[in-house]
Length: 290
Image (cartoon, rainbow, N blue to C red):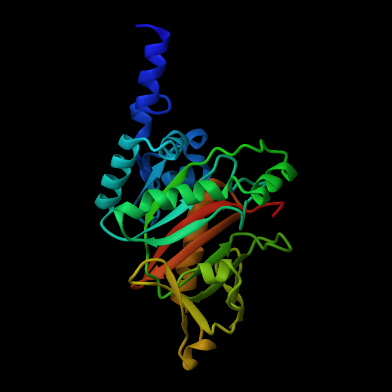
């Protein structure tokens, strides 16, 4: 076969052949070089039996195939999205993202409550585009990374939490061996985006509550039945009510301990509680630089 025909066949198949235009089950997305750090850590978390919602991962080749309107890549994505059985969150898992030196916090787009198989490819491409903005490129330059991003994507079943937030397994300011937890009603993006003053809890290394400061949580982000999210006003009696009680704090401490056993100390964890069950949404190294 001539080189010209070989190249033409490769273009039809997509980058590096047809096998790489199929999503992987999230539990199988361990290869950080292809699926990015976010997907890789979630894969390892699932294999360790941690409570991660189900999902799929699109490697860098699959994302680029979608950007080239590769029909087979689109077909496989739609089929796997349907198999997840409900609304999903679409998040960046770019190569080099969520490392100890660079979190890319606020740089790459996250799209929540994607409900239609025909929408999911558009969501993936929007996430990809967010990594190519001048702001994201400037961030990469400051971190000494290649300006041209390699973007993988996680598509994960949505959790509809009554409360959610973040947890640092070491104190983010002092570096002490303490858990610092922030929590708010609804989706955790209200905490990450700074839309509310969240509850703040500090636990000792053995899980004892050292500090409990209740925030002002006057709005909650919820899934919109039409897709995306909506801000809801929180009932007055809940604005300054504690999101977390002792049993929840004990569960979060246990989750932090298990994550550190697998990934080392000093982790930034995103979590959610739905129907009284705790879920791990993301686990990454705490960053030296934001």
